[in-house]
Image (tube, rainbow, N blue to C red; front, side, top):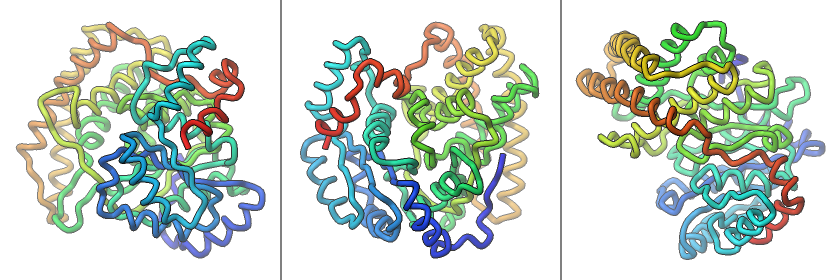
Length: 388
């Protein structure tokens, strides 16, 4: 995996080059936005920072919420000096287009959530853009460098990348707290256990392990590739995107870029695997199991899930010891008991979510856009008219 470290990356230098490349490659930004995200006190900063990215052709806000929320979203992002489309993804007009699509033989009316909103925005953006950056709207320390770093590697002809993924330190610098528990305490050890179980030669697992933070929602992607990817509708969107990438492109065409340290909304810990952190872990694990089955025809059984859960506890305990050492040496606040409790909860997720997958192994994904256009050739244009 090519890793682009931020050693001397400068906005002015990249922005100048992006302006030069914009004569050939049209770029933009897609931001999925829920109504609650509009309460982000830093949202005005997102608008201000995006206004500095004058190399962008257009910004797409994929909004889901009420009519009142849509009006507020339109007012907030009306402050953009760059052309923008505010897409009301769950409007009655958009739903009507999906009903017509179902009548044409492709029923997507059962799909909801962020993945659906992103899918709609990708289709509309593909009418104008060659590449786009995608990130959430809950970032509390937004910078013009985020879209710039995500876009530059995929439009610079000298580099030849199709996909970029951001990574960053999950640290609260003010309170000196280490976050990223899903990745640290679940994803990292479970990937190691799966390698032990099924073999280190599986390219998919090696690909996932090569990322420094595979749960980041900040990516850059060429439009041509995006139209070929299925889009997960659940909370496994970020991991699902990587799974789709490796099914459609060579790992060498992906890179990861350093986005520094920044803050966004943190998910809460609950007892339910259908909420918060545990739901994310659940859907991530199901996504991994499904991809392993699709790519390598591996057989997943209840006995295998139990052995994976047992091995996970050992591996996660080792990780906790390592993170505690890092916290002590860096004078970070580290709750050893909480970390151990979360490890136990994640271990329970493995068997529960695995059995759920065995009962219903079919992916909950929007189809790629190529299939959708074969069912309704003017679907993008119709969604554009209905949603904006």
